[in-house]
Image 1 (cartoon, rainbow, N blue to C red):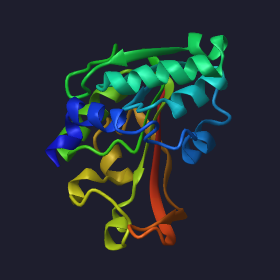
Image 2 (cartoon, rainbow, N blue to C red):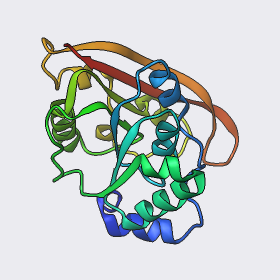
Image 3 (cartoon, rainbow, N blue to C red):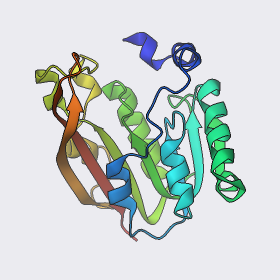
Length: 210
């Protein structure tokens, strides 16, 4: 499991394939941010940048953060392909999230899609991310639900890599935040054999009180 949290592991994985991810933005990111006023955003663990590019298309200025320089090069490449206006709204930041400390009161949105890290690191990330959100802004976390561990879906096997809305909310100051979304969403996917099945995403969106 340790390799999953190592930049060299991900650099090698990205180099080994022309495209690792689908290139499509996360559906739950779209549904949760549609209707929000575009402002400044940070995407933590941005990968190849599909979500950052989608946010930029909606008018957000996005800091795309990842510890893999190979992934960030692809973000820049795909953003340039999307057009100069899109590319100009995305800044890539090479940083290990275990050490990265964003500026406080800086972003209107901080999001992470399918960033599965050990519980102690997740607590640190949530604390730092929450501190970087402006009053009125949002913290959005989307991940695989623990229930998928009971199916034949290919998932990291350690239960501590997964989270619930209640666990995330317990890591922020409840007096300063409200829970806007806490749900598990079923969608179609495939199991390890490629057979169609149902998979589940947990979606947590918190808003910092003004």
